[in-house]
Image 1 (spheres, one colour):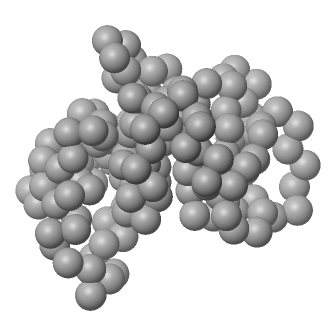
Image 2 (image 1 turned 180 degrees about the horizontal axis):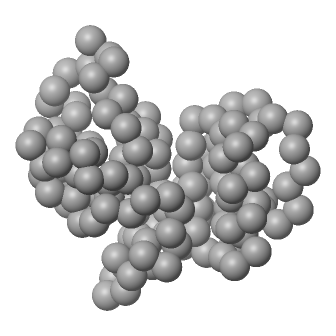
Length: 145
């Protein structure tokens, strides 16, 4: 099973994940209000419940990566970087970003080649570039874990 920790989900993302859930067991963790969309295949729970999750656990921003790093139940943790959100936060210390992006406890994955290059320049080389939610490629990263 794959769990995704995200601050919020929009309708487009939920529809995409609902379609993908027909092939892969998913669980979403969020503390925000969910858009009014029927989710038949995906359980949704609070972020706090992710601390009991034992499958592949994916964070999607620096805040959810902080949660991910505190998780002791899953040894398959991935920070999926879709954009360089930290460039929009002037008061975010670089040391904090180093702790998140350079943590050996997390597999770092970029969503595009441009994001990969930027992360490589400022932090470390990501494990891979995975465009979209390609769960087969994500599982491949954890094959030997």
